[in-house]
Image 1: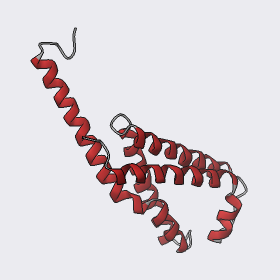
Image 2: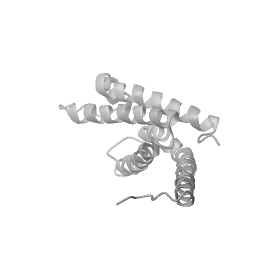
Image 3: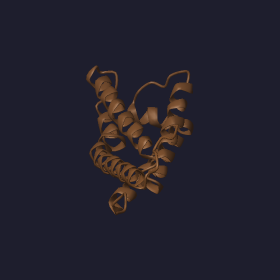
Image 4: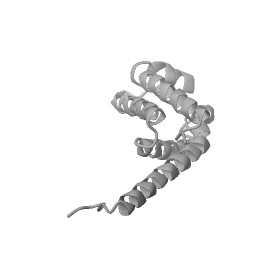
Amino acid sequence: MEPLKPWMRWLLRFVGGYNLLAGLTMMVFYHESFKLLGVPKPQLMLPLQLVGILVGLFGVGYLLVASNPIENRNLLMLGFWSKALGSALGVGYVLLGKLPLIFLVILFFADIVYLPPFFVIMRRVYGLAGKRSADGASTSLSSGRMLHPT
């Protein structure tokens, strides 16, 4: 059985590319982002640029999951929790009035929309990894080999 259905692989590749572009935008074209949101630009851009690097690295991670899902499944879990916790933080800032309401649209298309499919993909790859592990253990036991030699 293929670890990923075609839509899963496509989504991971799409999100990987999206994150690479979003990360690059945060590192290089941050002026336009502040104009779009209508929020004042901070004097020090380093924190935003560091977040851009992390966003880009998550993009690389999603591409790795798309190409080798079982072995790279933990990268997907990190991405899922990053999107979930980042979404909660962003919604909180909007509710506190620190960010404009339009930020929710950006947050939705950048993070929230991917949470359900990421969860479905994680269940699949973690389930397959557990099955492979159990199959490997039973094969090792039936052949008389020790799993953890001393």
